[in-house]
Amino acid sequence: MSLFNAFADGSHFGVAAKTPDQFFICQTGGGYVGMDNPTSLVYYDWLLGSKPQEVVDDSLGGGSLSSAPVAIAAPVASGVIMAARGMNGNIYFQEGLGGWNQLPAGSLRSAPGICLENGNLHVFGRGDDDQLWHAYRAPSGEWVSWRSPEEGIPHLPVGIASAPSVTSPAPGRIDVVVQGQDNAVWHLYFEQGWSAWESLGGIVTAAPTCCWWWDAPTPTFHVFARGQDSQLWHKYFEYVQGEGTWQEWNNDPPALPGRVMSSAPVAVVAAADTVDVFAGSAGAEVWKTRWIPGSTGGWQPWISLMINSVEYPD
Image 1: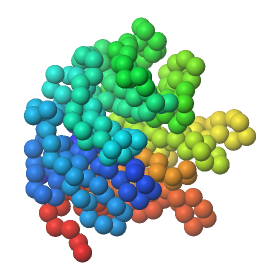
Image 2: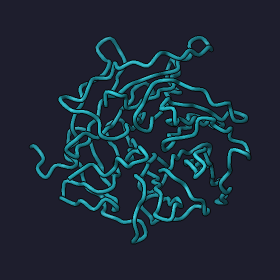
Image 3: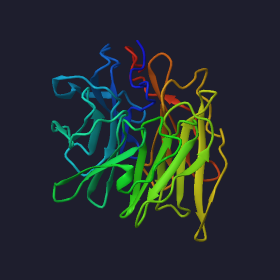
């Protein structure tokens, strides 16, 4: 069995934090029930310290997925919204496990990146032109169709090589990170208009992931990526007294014990100043590490969720 949520485009599986210790996880294929269909979707609820509980076993409209799914926490029935790319290149989304809906037609090359911003559901993806495309649904329910770089989002000269990761920490603010075709991480943001792309450097081997500590005492924007050593690397932007500074890439997060990462990472924030990072390893397993504040905090050891194991320890 292999970890089917690591697609060729470097996209990631989906994780949404329901509470600081409860997570919703969706992935294609795998599953501790022995399922190994790479185009079918499995969802789990996972409470820290317990066995993951399978929620449902589903395929996209009876068809097939061509990307890994993404998930975000949301005020809907199940507490999550999911999205994925279908075989036709279009993006489908699901709210509250209530059935799949198709976005306005638009052929994309990657898994989507999604976020909620001031009641708007935003969807981003890598287009056939290797540039960032964007569509969103207003609170009225109307979709504003895909917008190209010529219609507002700046053109990335080196081209995009991965699925985007997006986050909205507050109304009016959206951040996006991607792997460029130069294998560096690139970042742009929306705040009363789109910024220019900025290179964050590094040499990464899969889609990066990002998250904000917006409400923390020191607001911090985190970026994580899989490095050339197939381990987790970290870069962050920290506001101090109203001014921001990028820190250099570091490999302070612990290495996976005796393993390397076989998927892109996924970072989620469930509390103001903690961050949880999920990643897949060889052997079809999903792992998690957490950073917690304080003098006795720091990065915690990786733990295995045992999602893709037939046996689960008591």
